Each structure stands twice: as C-alpha cells, then as structure tokens.
Length: 133
Figure 1: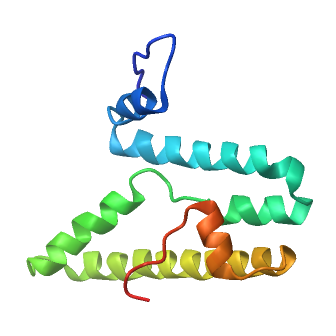
Figure 2: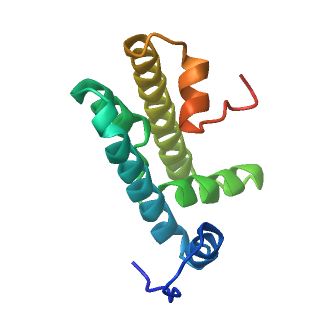
C-alpha cells in the first residue's frame, strides 16, 4: 500500500483527502479494510452469524478486478474486444452477478435476524440501491 502523509490531528475530511491520493488498487483494499473495521465495531451488538453476514456483505473484489472489467467494457463498446477477451468479460460479469446475489441473500438473512426488512438494513449500512432496480 502507498504511504500517505497525514497530520497528527485528522478530521474525517482530512482523512478522506489523504485517502483520495491512493491508487485504485490501494483504494479498493483500504475500502475493504474499512468495511471490516466497521463490521468489527458493530460486532459487540451483533451475533456471530450477523457478524459473518456483515463481512460477506462488505466483501470486495481483488485489487484491479473492477479496473479489468472497465477496460474490457470499453473495448466492447469500441468493438475491439477479441473473442478471448469477450469470454473473460463474460466470466468476470458472472462473478459480479454471483457476488451480488450472495450479498443480497446475506442482506435478506441479516434483515430476518434483526426482524426488519432489507431496505432498512441497507439504509442502516449506508448501502444504496442500484438505480436499475
């Protein structure tokens, strides 16, 4: 991970400015670590299963994963995608869809455990619904 210089007393805005200096891969890794930290801080109020679900909900992809999809998507739109790249693109999209399905299942189970609905859990966790739903 890159090194970022930070003042001794850091406001959330200062921290965000520092984080904005990270490379795309480091930013993904940092975001995943923040999500884990958030889940751990809530852990005293959560059961073991709820904690497991929180970790699953906040699980990210390996650094560079989204960048590769974006690159392949650009090539697809430009109609320069090779057959091998097209197959890779389809595999990566399938992985994203599988992860989204697992995340939704985890959200639904977490909502059941907390005796609420998925919308409330998403709001509580700061997760926005995709616009196409």
